[in-house]
Image (cartoon, rainbow over all chains, first blue to last red):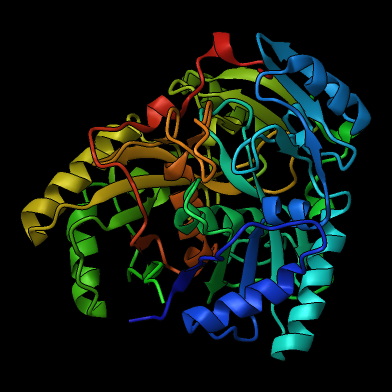
Length: 236
Length: 236
């Protein structure tokens, strides 16, 4: 039987606050769980703890749409569509999501989290500190849960990446009939983020998952390269 | 350490042909691999072998756009956008994807696969036969690899589902601060399909993956319920 891929949940006790070091707390939690990080693991971190650690929060009461509107503008997001209470935006990073990624769940009441200013940089910083603390060469993905066009429900996607390329390009490789594949470019960082969500749940204190055994192309990738340039997008 | 989720690749030797029974071949491959299916496993099956087994193929040479156009029309798909050689369509099932899901990879040269006529029915049929053959109560997902709006690259999604609900609805559950979650509805079938892709590769004869340990809501779900109704979609 082939080994396959394993997704290990990493619970972390206690709230995250501005100034916390996310990598340090991951290492501490790994020790508490007896989970040893290995080279080539992908450590998926929900953006929420990164945002809190980076002080990317703001005061807002749930349902206060006036404040939300002001925050969306302050975040520099463009409004693409509106329907009822929902606002679909394109963030400064280029991500298309509701309300510029402003999120009222799993944060102190009266507060919301904002997206990290530069989630790729946050991922690189966590990755290099994990290397220093644990001596392992892992990849890091920072995830958020976004809705999408055409399909019901939300899925986890990668908004920050370090240590791996966000896609695997099968262009010019051959299929099982020896034919050259023309276009397949798999967004593996998004698939790994989605896989991580399967152990994270929504409110159970599991902000990190370790994905082991997935085929990724190691390298200096960025989640920003998962953003389709506006001029190439047929559905903005 | 918590158990987490495991994704096991299931290689299947030999080509699929019209009349093949997909569930039978899965059972045979499980035996060959020493992989025992368990209750609550999710068996993810690439649509390609289902299409071949159901005779859903058509003659077409790669790059023959005239024939492709005729096939798209015959498949009853609506054309949403065109750019260069690319045609984005909405299929009879409601799925938004390139070329009505017509696919020239991993199929005999001069042939393409079409999407199964009713992938939810195909999933139910595989599930019930696995129950009869192996005595296990699994869920089944039939997957395809679709592009998406706004983001680069393709990901695996669920186009057929049986034995589970395609989403987990966290509406009216509470977060870690006791606040009621308003909107989170996770498309877990798509996340499991994405996770399965991590062991499938694109041309390595691994058309099936077994996802073990994922939290899903068992029940009579359909992938068709992942299609956002056109009147609710802001980006069609």
